[in-house]
Amino acid sequence: MSNSTEAVAHNTYFEGKVQSLGLDTEYGKATLGVMKKGAYEFGTSTPEKITIVAGEATISVDNVNYTRYTADDVILLEANIKFQIVCDTDLAYICYYE
Image 1 (cartoon, helix red, strand yellow):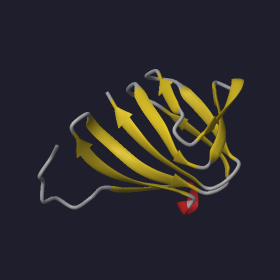
Image 2 (cartoon, one colour):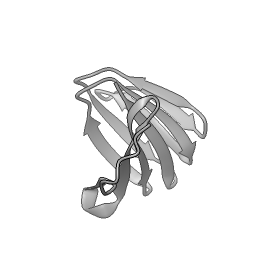
Image 3 (cartoon, one colour):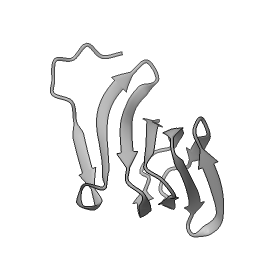
């Protein structure tokens, strides 16, 4: 875990509808984020482990086989892929990067 005194990284996407805060954890780099209800597409550059904290969404990798996720569900994503997420409600998540 970092004891850095640097400012917290704040990322904003999709005209402010998706936002995240960066942090260093005992598991490595992570972001805590929120998404407003809507549909979004993201890409990965490293493997990601996303845990839904609150809300509901369906997620697909490359528009194939949409799967529904709710609070406490974990999504494992490979590096260098695109994934689509449709948030049925406002959503909160934590994402760990390898």
